[in-house]
Each structure stands twice: as structure tokens, then as C-alpha cells.
Amino acid sequence: MSSVSLTSVSLAYPGGHLGLADVDLDIGDGEFVALVGPSGSGKTTLLRTVAGFISPTAGTVRIGETTVAGAGRDVEPERRGLGMVFQQHAVWPHWNVGRNVEYPLRRAGVGRAERTRRVAEALELVGLGGAERRDPATLSGGQRQRVAIARAIVGRPRVLLLDEALSALDEPLRDRLRLELRALTRSLGLTVIHVTHDRSEALALADRVVVLDAGRVQQIGTPSELVDRPASPFVARFISDAAVLPGRLSGGVFRASGFPIEVPAERLSAERSPDHRARAHRDPAHPVHVAGERAVEIAVQPEHVRVVPDPAGPAVVESSLFGRSGDELVVRWGELRLRSRASGARCAAGERVRVEIDRALVFEPDPAQHAAHASSQAEPASVGA
Ligand code: ADP
Ligand code: MG
Image (cartoon, rainbow, N blue to C red):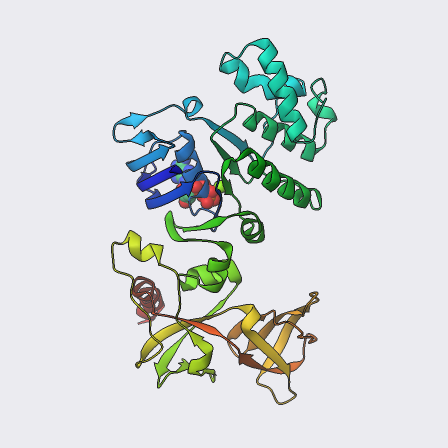
């Protein structure tokens, strides 16, 4: 049984802007799902739709067995069995910690003895045992965020919704709270939807990650699926800082357009996860083969860009940051900029290098993006004419 289920959910804001477009998402009981995507991609909109602060214009939202939105239903947020934590710890400053945490129980009409017991238990769980009488003003940012988490779990929700809940905190506190949150939600068997703009946080914490762009689901997968088998160049770029190069396949070899880059067949991979964008458009996903002769795009992740110092090399190291297993490099090769994070590489800024590609993923060019690109390029020319 899935715990949260969105079926063909769309949301148009007043004025027609599509906040969500045909979103399908099934989250299992006890699953920890992270929602990532560029700013404005619809992460908060999706969370607020599940919470019930906004109603979808199409589609249905189910929590457990209950349809809470769509199909003529619109269950109010308080009755959806959810806990919520936002970026800014919404802790009421004029109430002590206990009163803050107790609030959802008061609203639900839980008796005083039971409230006291459950508040103590929730505070214990977030590492603030005995803090009932403390004034929120005397707490650190991290402690206030724990109070917000205690308040979100005190009502024993089925689902916990977190919107950038850790983003306002500084390291190393954030790192610690991240680990604690994961342990806590596992031990309580909570289903979690965690919105974050931090890709590493999403990959580190989640069982599955949902990548959103422009209100559409681009891919849903485990962290390793997203890294090893991105469904589109967008996902490869967003999740892994991949470089995307257009070019041609011919005789099994990829040749970049306008660039002396060649990648032989044995270094090309066309294996991928299902493309949710294709599914959302109701197109069959195109199988991709390395054979044949045609225009394609390749995505190259920084881990697979090998940079070799070479005084006669065609590229120059633009920046070099020390990394534990190898430097993080940005290499400029004519117009092209590539990131490299190959293990063992040590190069200084300004050094001349040659670049080898150890592995690249092949994608069919996206016709929609192609058209948009072509028309945006055509404009300046027509203005000049
Ligand atoms: P994210 O959380 O991923 O940054 P949001 O869900 O907040 O993105 O926003 C998605 C899109 O919807 C953005 O383009 C944003 O400008 C738009 N949007 C958000 N809230 C409203 C609103 N109340 N009215 C109109 N447009 C909105
Ligand atoms: Mg947001």
C-alpha cells in the first residue's frame, strides 16, 4: 500500500501559470522521499498540494486509503494526518517549548495528562528531554528547529512534510540534524517528503529522489539510479554537474559538433531509467542504441572527465579546488567548459592539459528543447536583418 499517491496532478495558479503539470508519484509506507529541482520548479507547490493548503486543478491526491483532494474531495489540512516543518522554525516566541509542542494535541482535543506524556516523549525523541519550560528565545537555531520537529511528530502523523527544514542551519549542526532526522523518521516508521535545494542532502538521506523541473517530474529513482542512469541530460546536469555535448554517432563512435572530441563505442552507454517526462507526455520512451548514424547528445559527468597535464594539450585548467580524492577542476577548451572530479587528478590553475572521456551517456536530442533553442537563436539574426 502506498502512503501518499498523486495521480495526474496539475495545478494552475491564478493567471494560468502551471505550478504542477501532470504529476504522478507513489510514495511507499515508511519511505523517505526527497524532492529536488531548480528554484521555481514546483517543490513547495507539490508539498502544499499534499498538505491541503492548495487544491489541484486536476488529478487526485491520496493519503493512505483516503482520497484527500480531487474527485470532488477536499479534506482540510488538519484532517490529513500530517506533520509539517518549514525552513523558518515557526516556533511561537511567547509560548514556552512545551506549549509549542503541545499545540496540535490541544487542537485535537487530547486530554491534559495524555498531552503532558506525549510532549515529554516527543521532546525526548528530538534530544530535548525536559525542555518543556524553556523560553524559545534561550534556544539555538538548531534547538528551535528540533522543537518544530517535535511539534510535527507529537500528533503521530502518517506523513511528515519538510520544506527546506534544515536549510537555514549552519554546518556542522545541519549535518548532525540531518543524521538525527533520518534515524528518528526510520525508528518511527514515518513516511517523509523532504524538499531541499541541496542535491547532496537529497542523495544522502532519501530512499528515492524526485527531480522536478517546470512543474514536471523529470525522474524518480534511487540516489544511485539518478547518478548512474539519469533519464535525461537535464537530470545528468542537475544531479551530477554533467557537461552536455551535441554531436553525431557514426560507426559506434561519437564525434562532438565543432569539437575535436571523440568517444569510442566501448565508452558510450545508452542504459537508462524510464523517462518520466516521456511518460508525462504519454509518448513511448524511445529506446536508445549506440549503433546507427544520427545526431545525439552525450552527458559526461565530472567523475568521467580525466585531465592529463600536457604542455601541448588543447585545454587549460581554469580553476582547481583541492578535493580529498582528487582536485575539482574546471577546464576550458575553446568555448567548452568541463568540470572534472576524476580520482587522483592533481592540477594547478593555468596548467595546459589534454582531456579524456572515460564514459559518456548517450541521449536522443529532445525535439522540444531543440525547437526552443533554434527559435531563440533565430531571433537576433532576424532583428539584424
Ligand atoms: P520551488 O519551491 O521549487 O522553488 P514553487 O513551488 O514555490 O517552487 O513555485 C513554482 C512556480 O509557481 C514558480 O514559477 C512560482 O513563481 C509559481 N508560484 C508559486 N506560488 C505562486 C502563487 N501564489 N501565484 C502564482 N504563481 C506562484
Ligand atoms: Mg520552495
